[in-house]
Length: 575
Ligand SMILES: [Zn+2]
Ligand SMILES: [Zn+2]
Image (cartoon, helix red, strand yellow):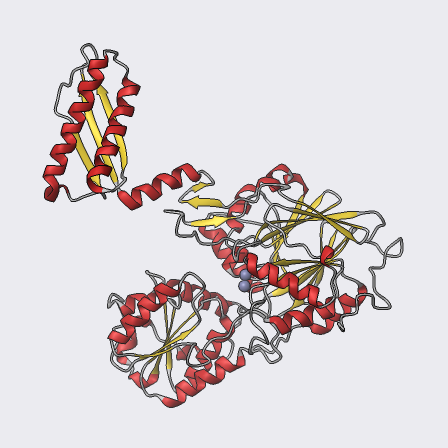
C-alpha cells in the first residue's frame, strides 16, 4: 500500500469568491520552451487570462554536431506571437542553464526580471556584456509578490549555488509549484535549510501542478550535505604542507567561501585564478557573501611566488577541463603566474558534467605527468551534487501531493523515471505528463490536457551576432568541411567559344597536403580538362550544367582515388 494519500481531508484549492485568485472554470497553460528531454536551456511559460509569466531562460552548450555554434537558446517563437502578454521573468537561480538565455530574451522583449541578489548580480554582468539594461526586482526566499495577476511566492531550497529558490505561482486558473533545481540539505553551509514546512503547507492548501527537477532521479537515496565537502577539505588542509590548488564551479559561492575559511584557519593566503572565478568572487564580496574573510587573506595571483608553499591556496576555474581555463593552462605549462611543482595538491571539487569526461581526464593525466597529487571526487568526498536523489524527490512529492505532475530538468530517461517514481507513490498515470519543448499543458477544473507540438520548441543556435540564422543546411556544410575539407576548382572560360583561357586552378583546404600529393592534383586537373572537353562536345554553352559536371566528376574521381568526400566548389569565370 502506498502511504501517499491522494485525497487528504482538506485537500483541494480553495475556489470561488472567497479567494482573490482562483476562479471556477478558469484555466491556465504551461508551455516549456526548454529543459524538457534535455539538461539545459530551461525556460517555462505559464499563461493565464492573457498574461504570460516566464520562469528561467537558460542556454546550453552545443553538442558535437553543432560545428562553430557558441550556445543554444530556447525558441522564442511563441513569445514573439504573444509579446504583449508577457508580464515578467522570474529566475530560480543563477546557473547558466537558467539565466544564460536572458540577454537574448531581453534583446527582443523589454520585460522586468525578478531574481535573488546573487542571481541578479550574475544576470547584470551578462546584460552589461550585451549592452542591455532591464527593469530589475530583487526578491528573497519567503517573499510574496505579484507579477501581473500572478501571485508568486519564493521558497527556500538548497542547491549548488547561493540564493536558489522554488516558486509557488497562483493565478485564476490554479496553483503551480516549480521546484527549480534543488536538493534537501539539513545543515547547509549557509544555514538556510530548505523550507519543507512551507512545501507541506502549500500541499495542504492544494497544488494543481508540480513541475520538478529530475536530474538525479536515477540515483537511489539522498544527496549528501555540502557539509561533507567541507569536512574533506579540512582533512586535506590538515594533512599537507604543499601548495593546495582547488578547482571548482565559480558559482558555488558557499563552497568557495568554505575553502577560503579553511585556508585562513590553516594560515594560508588565497589566490584566485580564472576570469569567471575572479568575477564571481568580486560579485559575491560586493553582495556580502564572503563576510568574515579578511581582505588581507587574499594575494594577487601574480605575487604568489613570494609566498611559501605551505602558506598558499589557489582557487581556480577549470574543473571541467575547459581548454582555455586556468587549470588546463597550468597543466599545459602555459599559465602566466602558476608553474606546477612536484607534490602540489590539486583538488577537483567537482565531477565531470556528462560530455566533459574526456577533457577532464586529459587534464588529470597531464597533472599526473607533472607528479602533482591529484584528489578527485571518486576517491574523496570533495564534491556533492546539487540535485535531489530519489528519496528527496519522494519527500517533495509526498509533501506537495499535486493533482498533476510534470517532470522537468532531465533527459528523456530522467523524465520517464521521474514519472514512474510519481506513479509508484500513488499518482494516476493520466495525471503525469512527460512532455517536449513546445508542447502545451492546459489545466482546467482539476484536469490537464496535453497538445503536442503546440508551438515551435526547437534548438535556436547562436553563432557570433547571429541568432537562429544557422540551420541544418549550414551545419551539414560545416560538418563536411570539418571532416573532409574543401576543394575549389577555378576555371576561366571564353564566353563566346566556350574554351578555356587559362589553366584550371585547384585549391584545397583541410583535404590533403598539396606539396606531398602533386600527382593527385595533376590527375584532378586532368579530370577538369576532361569535363570541360565533354561539355564542349555537347555543344551547348550551358554554364550551370558545367558547374554541376565539374562538381560530380571531381567528386567521383576523388572518392575513387581517396575514399574521401570533401566539399567541392567550382567557380567559373566567364570572360
Ligand atoms: Zn542549477
Ligand atoms: Zn539547472
